[in-house]
Length: 417
Image 1 (spheres, rainbow, N blue to C red):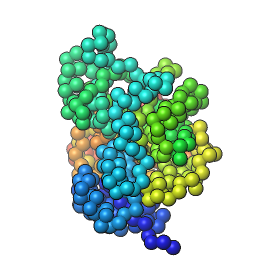
Image 2: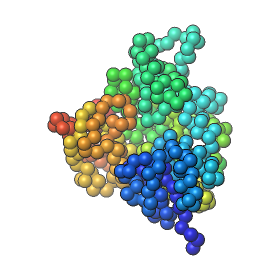
Image 3: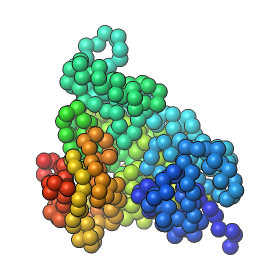
Image 4: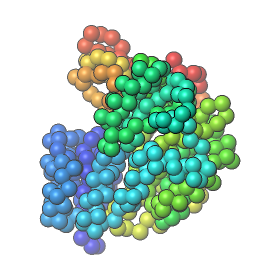
């Protein structure tokens, strides 16, 4: 038995608790750092530091002193950049290069690749290209995340304001204006890359709630498998795989988002990291392969060919599943009821809270309106719909003024209300 390997984890948000626990179960020594002393994942780690994940110099010194074997982050674009920079300095493995992250986080560059590989994208409007803007449009920072800085506009006056707002949220001060496709239905694709092989781990239907008032739509449910799985594979899967290879990606997890409208897919976004939905939990129930463990092993330099994904391509799904988001409206949370009962349901495999009692929610149109997310795996579609209805019945979020704060519920098997 060699010495215990050490994993440095950037960021201690609630999502990271699972990462710490998983790494510990794999026999690793875990160190969590960020600049919040109260970070939930720090309480679970073997050791915690109070160093900002953006302070690369301080992180480098600490990592050398601790002799860490690997660095990992997940669920968050900014920390992914920080981890890439830090591992480069330390000479440790990282699944992505700076160039890969540039492509995946910059909507312009990503669309350029899509066009090159015949992957359908939403048409956009450029300043001065002479094309009359047809409203509504959606205005986004070229490089933001978690739905920050995004506005839906109905006219020119709104467009001007929205562009100013989007600039503030963009690292490069650049803005994208696209046709707004008014649909509450998207299709998401999860690809897994392993030593240059591309596997389609899941295709899901993503349902959103459109709260109007210029806010972008926010997710309320992601259903596995997508009702458009066969259609997507027939039309676009081969080109997307070619594109990922064309970007030079070799390892890691990719999430691709598209809107589905009138029989057509419009691809608009890519994430090159573990997704906040923690889809690896659902994939593990389907396949017995734990993609989080695979990424942890990769980070500490282990051979990941032991994770055999060959039988689980083409969106393989044995069991209907769901990632159910709980969206909140305005108010301060006084009480959350029904969670214990919901967690006792055998098909609910995890709950990741992002807000708690005492938090004040404002309507920002970003993921800060999310109370948290359930992952659910069932034997049949009927059972899945029944479980979702039961969660809707049991879960109550009460504000200090006694109101129900849940903004929208996914009505399983029916349309969104």
